[in-house]
Image (cartoon, rainbow, N blue to C red):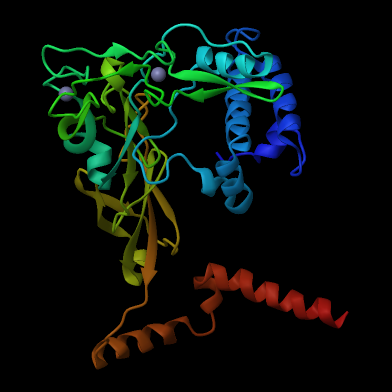
Length: 375
Ligand SMILES: [Zn+2]
Ligand SMILES: [Zn+2]
């Protein structure tokens, strides 16, 4: 899904002042706030969109990057594995309304949930059709096992920051407005770790490559996404982990082209077999099967092998295999073979149109074309 322009989202011009942006945001945030639109997915999406636009356009660095490069300039996915962290409505509410009405947020800052991770998994067509169990090696942040995520050395513990009293933010007055800023003492964490854990250096998380065994269901296709709840990055200081999304893409196959649950392939046949009929072996994903070619088969004719396609990952439906026969002109003929063909051609003389259904229609069409020209 392509993103809408942030100015458009807020309904303001590119030269809008910060005040105008805040005003527009306040109006839209109130309109779409989930508390006012319970269970309304569209309102929720609109709310997130409005929030994102506001956050970018009121941050002078991000706004400058956005004005110059568009969404690419402020893409949160850039350079990191995380993407699309869920918006926390309580947090948003505090930010906006605290900001505008001068009210402060109360209470302790909540440690952030871990980021979601994305893993791009490339499969062969056979693997995608049959399903398999894959071992994935995923670089991630895991909860530190020495301090159990607290960030504090054994025997000590984190203390609540005295500057912000655990809120992680402090209020500064800027003229008329009271503005929230990250606490300079604890850098927004709300906690002070005097004696940090030796392994994670007070972060509570450590970089780690974990190995996961993931079951890929039969029938997946490019664009399918498998969510593994809780397998993303560990949260801050014991907060819940994010999720891992396995994004599937299927490599091109030398013989088959997949279209939904159907498979499609081209089968070359000789022109004598096309004329006389016979059998050809066609490939399927379960091995070869015999396909009966009726007499007088024309090139391009499509044959459907029912149930030889792909089993849907979402239902029990099974697709078909569509085989298009392509009649080949023989090459590398020896003298004897050429002689036979010349002989054959002579037998057609005078009545060639009787034996060539396409030509009949074609020459009739040409004749009519010239007649129309002359009239
Ligand atoms: Zn630690
Ligand atoms: Zn603080």
